[in-house]
Image 1 (cartoon, rainbow, N blue to C red):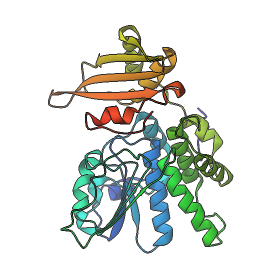
Image 2: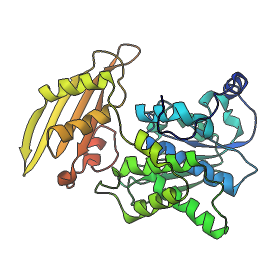
Image 3: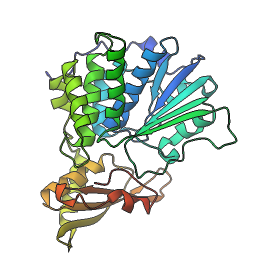
Image 4: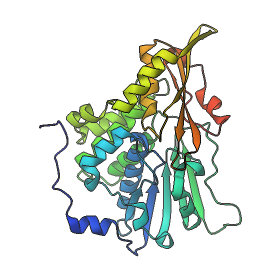
Length: 333
């Protein structure tokens, strides 16, 4: 079966798999994604690891995903993980950490087990594009030996912020772009496309477009973008979508069409329910969709996942403000 993917690599050897599971004592930097990583979080993390490796080639920088990825990212990683600087959480000794980078979140709670590593870092950098998020990652004043930097910029994608820095490095060093691989350029392009809705979301800026063009000019694979740029609903997601279409309540408020629905999976966590919310927004031809999903954890305890999506007409609705009432955040739309 031929798929329009990047060049396939040889299967990871047994020895390499064993090495990837082994704790290696070495000074290193780590870049964390948030839990349930999406393309923007993963792409931004890999881009920051690339930038740091160019700035400090003698000190290795690894990307660690603390807990879970969305289904589309998982499918991309199934083919290309070995081409990226990704390490397992349990393969790194926290005492070896020099600097920690965090991309696409400013909240400790979204780092999962990675939150514990913040106490070991000597330097912390955070890159985000969510202005309404409450930053609680940085150490207290008692930790005077820890330096930190927070970069939040008004663009559509966190990946854009770091790709711009990679581009500036190539200009300042007068370097021909030979250090950017096809897999990296493609992943960065997927990250920007995902969080800007292929440059269609209201928060998209010209900077996102320029960054995407630069990546296309420097090796991003259009066939791989076509393959991984669109979510495909799983059987479980399709079941939830069908149930949501029949159970959704429609409301009209100040000229906007709103959809509200609560679903019970009747089982453990179903990944990728944000894709279901986006399908509901399109299929129901509404402006705002609020989807509450009741899951059960491994202990049989119930918890609710609340997801919101807005169309272009619903741009004046600030969903991030609504989500903050329950400790969430994200984009306004």
